[in-house]
Amino acid sequence: MTPDALTAVADYLATARWFAGKGRDLTVLGATRVGSLGELGTFPVVRIELVDVEYGGAEPHERETYQVPLAYYDEPQQRIEHALVGTWTDPDLGRVVVYDAVHDRQATGLYLRAFDAAGGGEATYGQLTFHRLPGHDLDLETHSTLFSGEQSNSSVAFGEDSLMKVFRKVNTGRNPDIVIHRALTEQGSDHVAALYGWLELTSPDADPDADPVQLAMLQQFLRTASDGWDLALASVRDLFAEADLHADEVGGDFAGEAARLGLATAQVHDVLAEQFPTERWGADDLTALSDAMLTRLEVALAIVPELAQHADALRRTFADVATLGTSGQTATAQRVHGDFHLGQTLRTVRGWKIVDFEGEPAKSLAERIRPDLVWRDVAGMLRSFDYAAHAVEADVQADSAEANQIAFRATEWADRNTAAFLRGYVENSGRTSDGRLSPEQDLILRAYIADKAVYEAVYEARNRPTWLPIPLGAIARITQTQEANDA
Image (cartoon, rainbow, N blue to C red; front, side, top):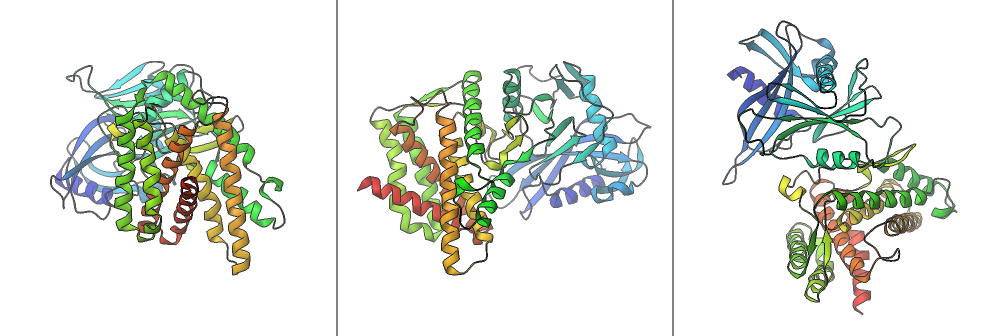
């Protein structure tokens, strides 16, 4: 890539919504072209660049790699002017006008045809290998639409047939979103969008056993899907609109959906336990889990002073996890979702679907694929129910008397759906006895919930201070329970 081209790409990268390094002291070290789609002499030509970024301010300097697919044209394309990266002279193509390829229907059509060429196997374009699972014929006559909501990646829907997710931040190693979707698809799970294929970078000189760099995935497009978070918010609003009714009396009651989501989660966890290695966590592992929660709490106390009044009770909650291990208890760790909440679910006419198995984006790949206890996922979903209820409450303008009533009803909604989800989960899970949580499982779940709420408090203090009362309120209720148990 020429110096002027690299400068244009660097400027575009710094303003892209999916770029995680905005506002940081950064240097673009260079770009590596890893593959092309299309033919010279016919526009557009798509070239996939991996851009290396280094951040200053710390030693050693942190580095990241971002995928930037570029669509090259010989003249301006007004329809995608918003995605312009720059204009420069290319050694092979001459003077070109270059755009972010995911915004361009003609460019993404090249991806779709490459996936189609793979059939039920592979199609190779230089270092790019398109993989396909058998069983679905792609619709090549449709056009693409870029989703505007996603931030860390870019998702493109092809009509109502398929959806391609382009991973913007790339790492060496198998992406858990692809790995888990493949395992669940091949097992016939009804709780995920079926995986159709994936794109990875391979070098002919590389060790055949080396981990690839995976760049994109193609999956079933759930055209009837409704976002789980949006559905939950609508249910809370319905409750607030009916001042004289309880949560179980309102037409928009969500508890049945919560129970079905619990069942879906349990069944997905069971398949993951069958398809991936599990670990038996004993005293050392449970102590390490406890120590990690305690460490996060101490960091949070320096950021959120309001946590101080709850610190002792939280410490006891986290310390109890270590006590389980020293008393001889064990727990089974396995592959989990890792970043589970209502926004990672879709309700379709065929039931609940779980999406985005990449795990927490801020964590390294090694951390995201490490086995964990399923109660982390369960805790994430339970915190999401609490957030849905109290987020709507925060938007309500009311006097003090009405505000107290709204707060009560929000807690009632959250408690009802928490109980329904847990019932759906434990009654259908292969890791619970007699459809109930054991005392040890209940203790670990409560610790995960508290740990998640502490994380949320730090996030809200830094990003949305007006929402800080949501996790702080949850922590107050959690510590009241802890104090009651200690009494």
